Length: 506
Image (cartoon, rainbow, N blue to C red; front, side, top):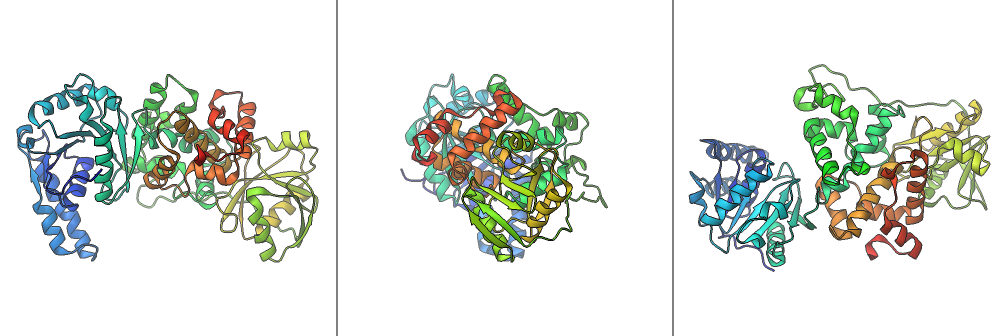
């Protein structure tokens, strides 16, 4: 299916930040654009704002002056919906209210030609519900951009029950022609990103509530070990807690109170207090002038270690051994079950059990659990937890070994699956359920999380890299520790682990 011809008029309804951003994208791609807003003068002001933004790009030599003039020349304010009659594509970016959107599309049906595609930029409402009651519901498609639209690559192409697959393909090709990375998704609550990404926030919030570590330490671990661009607390401060909390509540309600999407009381308290993050000057962190950002907590050791024993295969943590060797640690290898021994200490990659539980069940003395890292060769920080009764000497030796590898060490309370492993396992699990339910393909789920929220690796690809059996075991142990359905493993994850297949084979 070919993209819309650049001669096709694109109409955008809603001249707020999102609507203006979408209008800019379409105009820069070469389309004549009509921008409409019910607020008098809002469309003209938005176009003037786009001109200023493009001007700044010209000043930075990121855009040619002629390209700026041509883009702005393609943008025209519309005085009424009647002015959109010649549009071949209409994209609404108005208030997130189902009845208001339905009313708008009913008006557009009377104004626009039968060939015009009607698209909604909704981030949470059902495309099926928006199209219900229209004479031609098949031409209603979701076209969900991410803010800011000119910079964010992802566009979710959302199909409702009545949506014409050919039109969805045309919008997919059009988004590609506009320089975006589109993905197909069914119209289910949260689509891909706002559903699958929920555990990224939820698990850090739970760890904070349980006192596993403070905000700065949890954020640093997700960045420095997990490879995420931002931690959950700094990201929700950036998004705005009112927005992030509202999306979580919307998804939670839409899934009939499924505990996987349970909102956080900590975040609710911030919203109730008006501490919305950067835009209010205070969230998890303070943003007023002169405010100091708290530093992550690190633990240090003065113990001297120069050798360790590796027993068996450490799995995905194997590169840590290479890093230790490169740091001058003498490595002795022998058969075993994936353990590192240094002095009196035993180290192992977390499998989701409490350190104390694993030490008792597996008969491991002085046990220290280490967290998952995206890349053990390059990670700057690693979380650890210790079993009850560990000797101070063993703890110091374990910390010293990791320090020799150049790692900053953050000691957490004894908590199941630590930080990165817990977060990644839950993201992968949610991605598995989305795949199982036919929301999107495995490739599109991974692309959506990488392009939409800048994850370092798609959650399904990450699960395949860790190994589906370890991910499944982590979730089973989390579920056993908490006794909650929140951590129940996806049927697809269990099935693929049993079959020995990968998630991308599904």
